[in-house]
Structures are given as structure tokens and as C-alpha cells.
Image 1: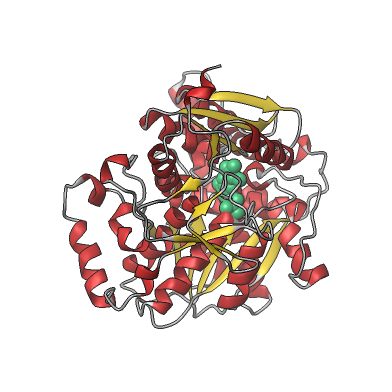
Image 2: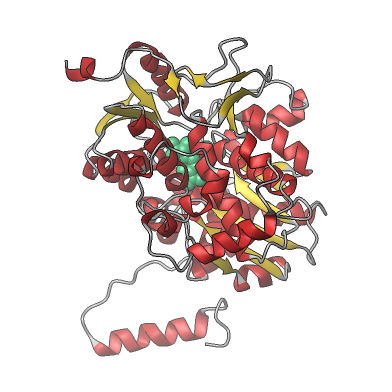
Length: 469
Ligand code: F0G
């Protein structure tokens, strides 16, 4: 097998010329190299990347802000990326020629005017990471991690995924001339995500297990085969994902919102955003920390239970089940990193039901923005945090929408046709009326002008969602 043409099996991932190092989040030990499972060789905990240059007095906040702003009008390849534009706070590759970019980042920050009316929160925004090249937030981390994979000379990259990581990894591998191996749970990822991986040329294995089973297998695989793992255990991914927070704060003229709300699955993204916020505070880029809150689906609520039942001290795993398949994860790898940043920023961790997710998704869609089900937990979670008094209506809130509406068309079609909960066998869902108001099923008609006009009139008279139409 041609696998032997790749770097030495199990050889450490060396960053010889780099200024950054790997720090264990458990015992704090620092190393210049990381083994292929990105775990500490002393205590087995996860690694994060740190660079003394990020804390040096050479990095002056006003200069950084103006450098990053100026790059927005540059046509240089690195500056066109909304990730590498912030390269002073990223690990540097040995040469910019290694960088694999699809012009990721530069995602919009939308005001959510209709959701603002629904929730009463006057300053409510959505940072839409679904507007990335492959349609999810994963691209921001993948450009960095794929770059370091190529720099290290790997021929194969691999991941376990609920769909978005695999789509993103396959795209960046293809772009960078590497091959990719995807492990996904059979039947539990959306067709659109699976089809992306196929089209970008990945070797795709649908395993008869769930995401956690795929990730376990990948961990064993990277020890035995010369493949480079691109799950969010890989700390380079999280460095790239930090730029979501940098770009967000830049879009808010460096005025921190009171709250940032993010979906929680394997918990890499919340960890990355939290790391960025803490580094930004440290560097004087922001005067105070926003509270970072993580929302999970009720059926995949490992972090919620970890806080409630173990005080955040050890992971409480669950058997995951939710239609928000992106976050159908029961044993999140980065739980400890997430606990730390939630605690450090004073955020909350909560869960929402399948009905609440469906409703919030339709509300975000009706606003002309749209997102995939996992992203909608943020709006559903905001409503809950408002009811609890944790978020106040006069505070500024940013929801992180992690995936594009087009990522899960089956969910959307089933919702609008009224089949979503019937399929799940949960016909006694509460709040059915409010869900029905959000449904816009297609109407099949003869190709007849009168029939269309009558349908138009019926809609005009019966759509309370658009009273002024
Ligand atoms: N939202 C979407 C759309 C996702 O795809 C994921 C994770 C999350 C939220 C949760 O982010 O894992 O960093 O807490 N998707 C992974 C995947 C696991 O394989 O695509 P997280």
C-alpha cells in the first residue's frame, strides 16, 4: 500500500522552526512537538497551542487592529482569507507557500430584526459561519490544520465526523493535493454533507456506529497508520476557529457584546472562541469579556449533565439522539476546554428540546437567513436564558450560526410538510400551533392562473406571520 511513502509511522509532529509550542491543558507541560493523537505524553490530556509572541509587548492592540483592517483592502492571498488576515495570533507555517486557503472566514454579521421582536432583545446579531466556502464554521480551523498537515509532509488526512468536518476536510485536502479518509456514522449524517465529501474526492467510510464510535476508531487508526487527524482534537483547528471571535469583535468595532451563544457538540468551537476571547482580553484588544454560553440538544446533553451532575469535574457521557445530527455526540472530546472557558467568561450551559430547535430554525429561516438545525439551538437557547433572567433584553447578544441552511434539506422539508415529529413518533409535541404558523409547505396546483390567484388570496388572508402584507 502506498501509505508507506508518507512520513514515519507514528513520528512526532515536529514544529522545528516554529515559535509556538504545545501546552497540556491538564498538567501544563510544554513541548515543541506533538504526537499524532495530540494528547500529552505525560498525563494523556488534550494539548493547546501557545506562542510567546502572542503575549509580547511587540503586539500592540491599536497597531494590530489597524493592520487587520488595512488587510481587508489587500489582494494578497493571505489577506483575502478571513482567517490568515489575523495571522499574528495564529501559529505561523514555515512558509506561506504551505498555506491551503479557500478564502474562508469574512463571514457576515447580521442583525436579526424578526428574532429581536420575538425575543425582545433589541441588539441581537447572528455571526453566520455557514457562509464559509463549504458551508460551515469548520473551514476556519481547517485552513490552518490542513496547512500544517501539508507542511509536515502527510499524504493522508483523516477525520471522524457528523458531516461538516468531513466536507471541510475533504475540500481542503483536495485543494492542497492530499488524500482524505472520512469516517462517518452510517445513516446519521445529512446527504448534502456526505455528497460534499464524495465530490471533493474523499475516501468515505460509513461505519455502523455513532460519531463517538467513529472518533474512537480514528484515534486507534492514527497510531497505526500514517494519517494525520483533522478532528478538533487537533489544536491547529482550534487556532483557526479563534478567528471567528476576532472577526466578530472587529465587526462590532471592538465593543464586546454581553453574550455570545454557540451550539455544543464535540466542544471544539466553544473552546476556540473562549481561547480567543481570553487572548484578546490579555492583549488589550477588548476591555472586558463577553459571557460565552453553550447550548446542546436535550438528547445530546453531555456537557449540561457534566455541569449539573459532576460540577464540571468529570465528563458525564450520554447515548446521543437528536435530529440536529451535527451535534449528535455523546462523549465530547473537548469538554474540559469548554468547561474552562464557560467558567472563565461567566457563561451558561443549557439544553433545548427538538421542538424548540425546529421552531428556532424556522424563525431564522423566515428572516431570510436560514441555518442548519444544530445552529438553531442558539436562538432556542437564548429564549431559555432570557426566561431564566441570565440574559437581559437590553443586553447585546450574538448567536453563532455554525452551518448553512442547505446542509440539511431533509430536516427542512420534513418540518414544512409537517412530517418532522410524526417521523420521530412524537405527535404529542407541545406548542404545535406556533410551529404550524411557521410551516410553508409547497402547494401543488394545476397550471391555471385562477388557481394561483386563489392560493395567493388565501395566503394573504390567513398568514398572521405577515399581517402587513
Ligand atoms: N454546529 C454544526 C453545524 C456542526 O457541524 C458542529 C459539529 C457543531 C455545531 C458543534 O461544534 O463540535 O465544535 O462543539 N460538527 C462536527 C462534525 C462534530 O463532525 O462536523 P463542536
